[in-house]
Image (tube, rainbow, N blue to C red; front, side):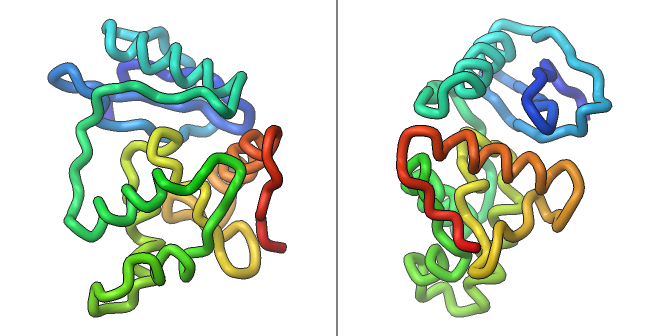
Length: 165
């Protein structure tokens, strides 16, 4: 995939892609990936906002986003955006908020979290397992799990943090 910018974060690099004046993707990359200066004005704007968030978990995002997904995925992503910074919900708790989908909702919630193409802005890291951090980006280990842990710790700085053991 082509990235329009790659910025350094603790535990990861964060890549941004843009198309037609909208942010189309944000992805966590390993620390071994090269950083990259923004290639366009929107990528520069996204990098500035990501850097502001990196320094202050209360920073807000104001980016034009291209959000593509099924109706159910969009419902999950909307629900994730409603989780306050410094708080978490389990996959099951989020599933109960979305009941009525007619299939294995907790598993579908997990899949929608992993399919999120705009993490940090759509905070899928705030959804955790009933007995631990859970997975991240369809992964159960490595730098992605370390990235999730960093994001959760970063956001707990101002409020009580509810990460289940």
